[in-house]
Image (cartoon, rainbow, N blue to C red; front, side, top):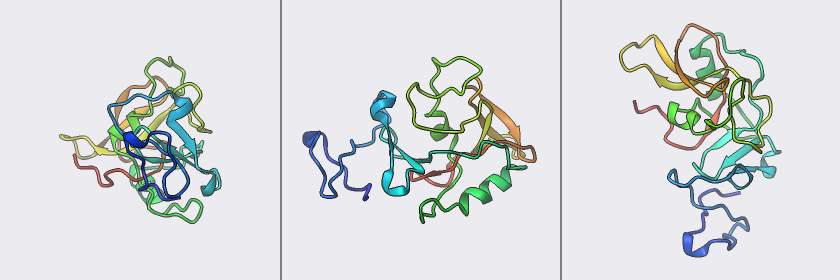
Length: 171
């Protein structure tokens, strides 16, 4: 599948040259989970396209905080291969927080109702965004209650790898 073959708004509902229709990603639109997320069957159903952001997420991040440090999580994502595709990374704070549904109460996971993800834990997931004033700290999104907290890079946490987007955290 070629994700670059997006239809324009005037082509809404029409197939792209690749035979699939995916709406043009736009961070200013809010899509219901039923049309926002698409499990990518040609990726062995191991990845999910977020049509709202254009990002591709692991369908099933590891259910255990196997990343004893933030550096380990960075390394694990950068070497991840899903359906013979590399290019994975830790998401930025904004990308990770875009998955949070604030209407879902604790104990989470605070994801939109009807999402296709599996094994998402109601805990803290590492982002690639470091604290602006404290370089030993990193921003963490809690899928327990949807909050953003600070975590020490030498601590443990969950990792949820992503493809696409801006890549390196620009902050």
